[in-house]
Image 1 (cartoon, each protein chain N blue to C red):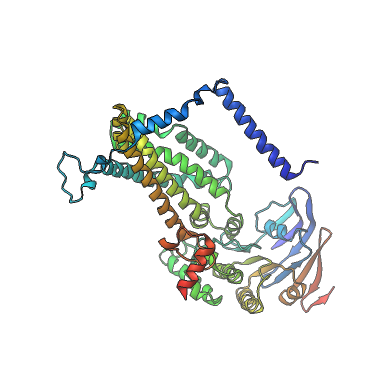
Image 2: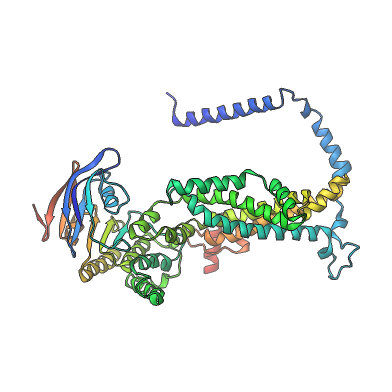
Length: 219
Length: 299
């Protein structure tokens, strides 16, 4: 993924002149105060908001290549855990590849992701009755079932207890390493952001400034 | 300085005042029609409406009743069942039509060049009341329930469709954004994200529409589209208001029962905290009492 001279915002630019390249296997964290454009940056990369200037070049599949976990998770509350995770599997598998095994392939991916997130007992429960932590695991399972090449996650670890954080982080990091995917993580916890990622950027006065590289050394 | 609260109060008062002024204009300032109305109503009630003619709940003299329970051969039962059959079929067909069209009319799901013509089509089907549709279909297929079903189906598509696309437009944006970013197609998003996410509202509207069609089915009978309305029309024509009162009570009871049924069905998608699938016994309880009851049952 390559961001070139990117300016983002709605009417006025929130962040300007972003130049960033992400390679497979990398995890990049973005930290900064609330309301300065972190979420807007992710939404722009996801194609949900048009850039004010510059470009976003994604070398990924148009269907299922990009995974997005919004801050509020974007789950279908009235549907079951399986249905939600199945949406990821649906996006990540192609009907045209082997039409007769499509359903089976989707089912396998869905069940595996649910198992990885420890949600097997909740498979048929509607998402709306799950706790906040369980819902975050459902959103992560949806992404794992999708197996995207680029994952955008917006503060998806906040409000999780330590046990849940460990389950989620381990699964996601393993997935990124094994599949050669990449991840951009918006995180409010600086320490966690540095631990998790290869490079950490901070948003300061409308600019994206690299603060830490792998190993946690401040630049 | 005008606060937000005061501004809402001012707007509310302005709306109320303008409504009174418009009403005054409609009656040309002549409010004399209201005087003596109470006495007329009491007289009408005592002399014409009450007591209702309960014999309409008994078996008709012809044709011979084959059921051991006479009520099942009564005019009230036969008319009401026919009306409910018409309403049921029209609601199902209307729902199928509207659920296919409403995602195409929701502005958060499709571009304006698709949503606008679909909205215009829905507005067209809604602009004619089902009574007028009934008159049109009677001219096409003749007198009877089929004309009533077709009339209610057309009206349902427009009316239910509007409720549905407004429900869809009001849904949270995050599920849509997540699924768009994933690369799901528009039809997948509509079918697998939007419809399940808005299921509570859609179900509620569907049940409301069925109840609406049952009530309107009675009106359609007045123009010869069958059902209980046929009997209502017949007795109103003969000024036999005690018989009319019986049918009104039957319709009222059916509407109340439908409302209870609607509450029960909606409870399946209305779970709160650890309350799951409330039973008939908990249906009238407020959420807090219902939660308490559910916990006791669990123990």
